[in-house]
Every structure is written in C-alpha cells, then in structure tokens.
Image 1: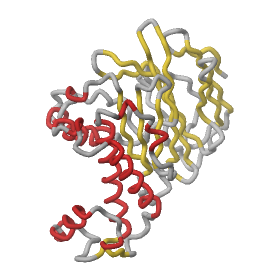
Image 2 (image 1 turned 90 degrees about the horizontal axis):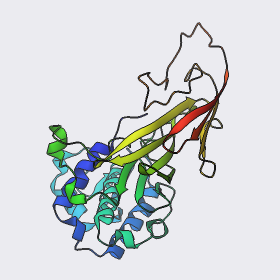
Image 3 (image 1 turned 90 degrees about the vertical axis):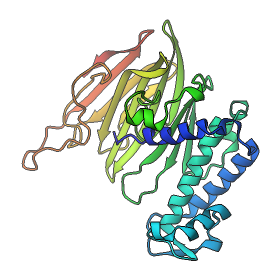
Length: 314
C-alpha cells in the first residue's frame, strides 16, 4: 500500500473544526454547488500541462485565490502576474475541492442529505458510504501524471465528535493519534456494515493501479473501539492481471481470493495481516535470472460472527 495521506488531511480537518467550520457561514447548498463547479474544472485539467499557461481571468478560480496568487508570486513556480500553468491550476482546484469536502463533512446539515446524489459525478471523485450511512470515504484522483493512479482520501464517521479530533500539533508530538489512522492508502470502493456481538463492524474494499501492469485489490474489517478504528482483518494482493485479486460477497459474507503468482506476488499466502507479523509481498521483485514458478492460488475466508477465518486454501 502507498504512504498514508490521511494524517495530513486530518490535520487540516482538525484545524477547520476548531475554527468553527462545523457551523459554516456558508449554506450547505452553496458549498455543494461550489464543489461541483470545482470538480467540473478539475476534470478538464491535465497533469502534463506544466508548459501550458492559462490566464488567471479564465482560470475559474475564486477571486480571493487569484488575489492571493498575485500577491505571493515569489513563493511559487509556474505562476506569473496574469497566468498560471495548467498543472498548478490543477493543484489549486485539488485544494479547493478537498477543502470544501472537509467543510461539507463538518456542516451541521451534512447528515440530513444524501451526498452521493448531490455531488457531480465527473469521474475524479468517488464517494463510498456504508449501508448504515455512518461511515464515509471521499477519494479524489490525484492526477499526478504517472501510471500510479493515486487518490487523496478522507474518512468520516458520524459517531465521532469532531470537536474531539486531535490537533496537528498533538499528532506531530504523538500525544494523540487520528481515529482514522488505519484507513491508509487510496480510498475505498465499497463499505459494508456488519452486526456482531462486539457491535457494528465495517468491511471496506479497495482497488488501486500501482503501475501500467500493477493492480492491487484489498479488503479490511474494522471496529470502532475506545474512540479509534482498529483492524480485525486485512488482506491485499498485487498482481499483473486486473482480472485477479480479492472479491467480497456481502450476502454470504465471504471473501474470495484468486490469483496467479508473478514477480509482484511470488507465492501463495492466505495470511490475515492484521493478526500476522509476516511482511506483505506487495511489489516484491525477484532475481531477473530466476523465473518464479507460477502457481494458481486461492483463499476463501468466511465470517464467523466476529472475524473472517480461512476455510479454504489451495
């Protein structure tokens, strides 16, 4: 999995909350409308536009952002008095979108609305919501220009008091940790709630393309305990084939893993990494002179009422 960006976003979210954005002066509808406008502009931009300059007047940036750019030109590359490179404009809209999502999340009308129906689907922002409408993931395509299709991810849980979130200083000094620390990586495609004797737990499935022919699928089972999310089950697999990997059947509560070994994952492994000290095989390489033996691997994990247990391995 990639380096976690959740911590940095939690910093910003903590600051926004402490500054009173939970009762935003802007209306909820206006925040959503602005976010949709930003997403439309973001979708048009390419990460390969470092040499392509766009007039600030035609950039569609808010006036206050344009004013700030003009008065702080010495701080940035790719800016001039009246224009901005396409790549830097992409970064500006990236900040605007994620900042607005943080404001929307902290707004007192957020839970009254179906956010998936309100946000424009331009293909760059994915929203996953648990079936009990309590756990949310917002994942924005980072558009860095490489074959690694990274995303910026924000988690939100309705049962967490936003005023209790740690500040950036508390996290930096390790006085406190973010309750969302376990949700590292590029976001999630689906979130399912599941009832257990220990309370409601959540199953999250994810996918990311790490290179031209590097495909990772992953799944985790988490519980919210003592004000923080903990992992009970974690599994991920990297493969050269996009057709292989991890799948979940919510009706039968069964996880199925199928893949053929390659240079990314060189052996069959059905370990639950939340309970194992073994290192994951993600992006492992082998000696170029030695061709790994190909194996067809399969794992089946079934939910036993508390956790997923391995019931079939071959």
